[in-house]
Length: 240
Image (cartoon, rainbow, N blue to C red; front, side):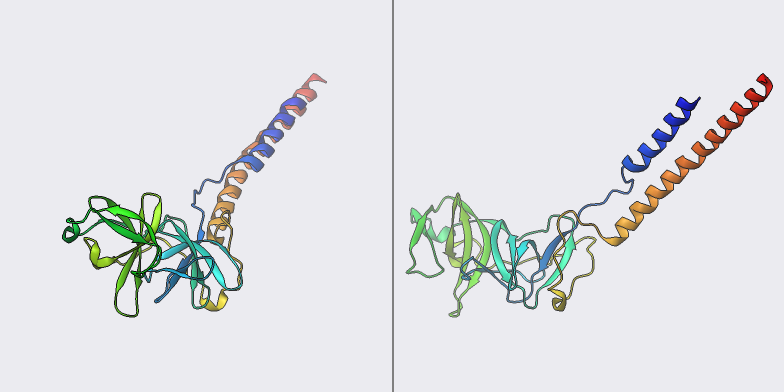
């Protein structure tokens, strides 16, 4: 009889400490909310492209001045000043798009991909006019000229927007699903949560469910133990 009681108690304790949370939840990952006029910068602080306002960029790390992010598959950094942060548990939509050379240039065999957004810049590679490439971002110049930052095969560089089949890019408004409230720019000194953190509501809900399950298991088991003890005493009484 003692072995049965010990086994029941062991099972109850095992369930208490090993049962998985019933309420499933995705992990919130910190994202920067892109503001107006936000440039994605390289490690040296040079501009890569102008980021679309209202979109989210996943934060990889941070220091005193910058958030290190990834957007459209491009790693860079953005200034922390006037940048809000939000937890997001889905893959944030980007603005990359497949483009090609405009038909006007089909008389040429290829177009140069430039290292910097200026005609006199070093050439990265040649793009055949029959090939496609991926738009990653815009680089507007002070003289109103617009360059695109693109990826062609394994190469990255700039091409004039007027040489592509889309001389202007229109962005759809980014509408996130089920986000938490944004952290204000004034609270940028608060630590960025790691990838394993969960919001308080989710933790409370999980703990409540866990407690309910454990209580539901412990109470019936307690009655069973009591009945076993009483049954043992009765048999012992009649045996005497």
